[in-house]
Image 1 (cartoon, rainbow, N blue to C red):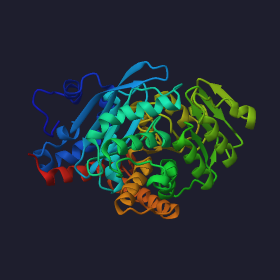
Image 2 (cartoon, rainbow, N blue to C red):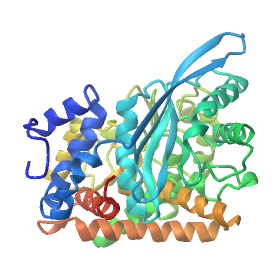
Image 3 (tube, helix red, strand yellow):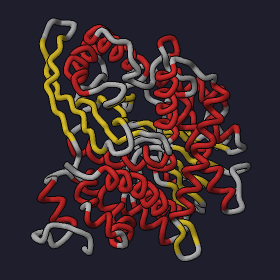
Image 4 (cartoon, helix red, strand yellow):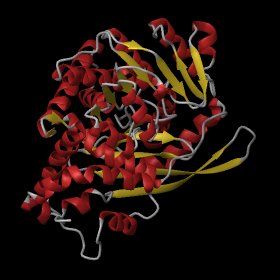
Length: 449
């Protein structure tokens, strides 16, 4: 490698294994950006002198803490809590909290690393972070979840603040959990501050936050298709997932003229060849709000087909939008999608396509929008919520939606500007390079201790 890596490392994998052993998700995230950012660092004496690469892949701070809480039966359980404050060069740390058994340092480092680039792309002053706990809320009572959130915030409050770190929600941390976390913060500190985003509008939350990620995905897709003399109208869209991102992406896709034929969850997927409607989407949201509910009853109510234990990537369509979780779409699935005529893939989740899948899409010149660009709408509106909290004023949904639309168009334009390659646009390269320049320039300008 031309840029500065300590001489004892003869490869990127050796470097990562030495600095971050046994962290496969984090290694994957770094490996997938290196080919794009390496030439940019090599061409900049300032970046090389500041050792930007090694600083960029090392979190500024990692916090791990015990979360001891009491069940309804009076038993004490212990979970691990985390906050990874990855890079604060362009603003206070910003990123979600996830409550899920798969939460570990590798997953959170990958998410926070990606978040650093994503936040930079929005043009808003937000650094990258991620956090959460290995707590599994499945089957827990509301009182138990509230007590867990209180115990979690008992430690987290020491490390966050409106000018330090402003967490949001993520998997299993929705409006209810944000409310419990915010209430605990307010009681512990005695301060009513914009220290969390995703709050309810009744206590300084923003309109459009729930819709933002899914809507933003389709805004980006619309711009991407338009830039290639195409459009969403009349296109068949395959979507995975059944949470907020998936259902609001489906809602906006339909509004823009698309036909959405699938949703999925961990137990399988629904194929509705007639296409989803607003009535069907509303039913999915209400149904999936019940703990452990499977999508299978959708077929009994609306028709279509249910495929147990499978993903929707074998369907025929024009657009694929993986909106469920990381590495859900692999190389074999990508080959099937290409064979079935897919024209574009847009990531609604964080890193849902494996490295093999991305290579397939690139080799076949399939339009591919990476999550760090395409799903940035959620954190963009979180950034707008921070601004509203600072001015102690609430903007209406129409204004926020217009701002979201502008931000997603600006992200698309940045990806096009930096992603031109061999006569086409490599959106992954564009997102990586545009994000790098923003963060690296700030790091160079601020120097080191």
